[in-house]
Image (cartoon, rainbow, N blue to C red):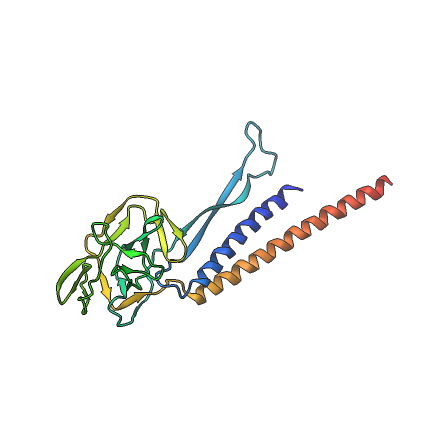
Length: 246
């Protein structure tokens, strides 16, 4: 197989990855707090060391799947009226306690659990600024949450919700569709913007993702046709050479 086919195959691998990422985004268009993924491709230059390029020759450029990153744009806020639904109007993440340790989330659909802890849809407890689970007492009937995350009832202050942000927002790894693992240090957000009675929706725009998927699919099909055409050309050349020898 010649160099053009290898270059085309590198493009196919990249387009396959792009289609996979776009499909994941579309599948989570209705997942609260979901952040869309984006792919980053770059050229991988192949140059033979210690040799002069032939006349008219150029550096061979392959497609490299460089990285996948998160779109940090905020999703639309949907007001629900549920006092335990919380959204973040600005920077940061809620911190929840999972079996794998503390994790980050923007999915603010919380509810009291059987033991009084305030938990998310997967049963992970919402943590306060000290890293401890927030508990709602049986006598706490009217829950209010201020913009800075202070949670109170008619009986007084219950605690303060911990809102943190990673030092490098791009170094977070998704664990499922709602929680993220910070691969770097986190710090409290100085002025959190907690909105009670609301939930942040996914920042995925379905129409945009569908358009992107159609474009990626056309690129994939075009490159596949090129690979097939190159294979047919090589086979035709082999057949002609074989006939001449015969």
